[in-house]
Length: 480
Ligand SMILES: Cc1cc2nc3c(=O)[nH]c(=O)nc-3n(C[C@H](O)[C@H](O)[C@H](O)COP(=O)(O)OP(=O)(O)OC[C@H]3O[C@@H](n4cnc5c(N)ncnc54)[C@H](O)[C@@H]3O)c2cc1C
Image (tube, rainbow, N blue to C red; front, side):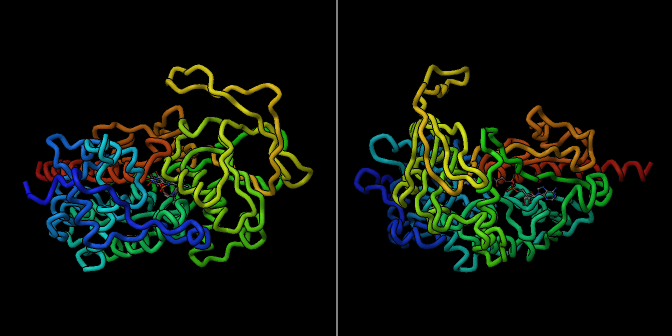
């Protein structure tokens, strides 16, 4: 092993420079700077190159992290990039928005006592450098194949599948109902976590690789699934989950109560230069308002931090459990607190107040009772603890469910789970319809970008086998 490694004993963990909260509050730019070369090299050298790399095991795409850390520590950056991109189609995106504290870094063996290696920031540094130096190139397949694959959804799952299928030479057509490529990476996740240019340059690279995008094209409106199946040799459904979960409370119908994704999409569109009437007329704009966000997941964190940047007068996050038991990343909670968000832990909404427009939320305090069958303590209301929290904008961030895909797609025979997610054979990613595969959130329920990438890669490998088999069978049939 290189003498340059194992430096965790003497070197402390460092993250790239984080911008001051006061400056972060005023724009939608990313909050972390880039590592300087010397810092990235030094931080990579903290890796202990342990015998069983738990970081790799717990990475959904099984990134070969110890190897690219060692290459970085030795200044062999182009090779580090080659290793990193061989398991992940968008490493610079995962480096920015993966919850590393729950995945690779949370599994690092030096975490106990020495703090983990800064894996995500080094991953981002490697690939951002690769882009800068021109090492990231469009795909040039060894041979063009006649067979074509239709991918429904241009989110990370669909894009990873498209990239892998192009590498094998298939003609790839990606259909999306949005007018831009990227799915939740472009319209859900705010720029302060993932700047839009990072997604846009990937979209351009895929187009330069020969992927054909059909935007503003909605399956169900512009074509049925059956029509698409007739056009292509295989189909990938990667449509994500978009039905916002709701709460039915007294006052739910008042103005000024909005779903999180509508709010975030309007903000992202505004940032991308679109004309957004709901933003201009104040419906989906927190400027000058007292804002209450209901929920404790990553979407709620993105909403509170967006509201701060839009110039809200105050921003409160209402969550029925406590800090320790929230589903969102603790790193994001800390960022939000630094930016001035107030967390109202152990509180749940009981009613929305107001005549036509919301003027407040009636909340009740909770305590954590005994654990349910999942092991999580159940929040229980504390009698007589109701209190009013004034607000002019209430944002509901309570999670997402799958839309009714069989009905939307005109394909009643497509099998779904009782949650509406598409059922697949996990060995092949194929649905019950021959040649129709499904991946990402529409299979798993709301999940992570890195899992969608993994699914896209797995499905592409399965489709390759499926189409090769089909071609061989066709040849045999022709010959006999
Ligand atoms: C606010 C928010 C913040 C998040 N933050 C993070 C984070 O920090 N880190 C992380 O790892 N994950 C995060 N996630 C989760 C992550 O974005 C998703 O898990 C991931 O994008 C799922 O990828 P996907 O390809 O399955 O679907 P999506 O990204 O949802 O893409 C689906 C695409 O399908 C298109 N589509 C849908 N229906 C049709 C149709 N009928 N016809 C044509 N096109 C259609 C949609 O327009 C969309 O472009 C966040 C999610 C949200 C909502």
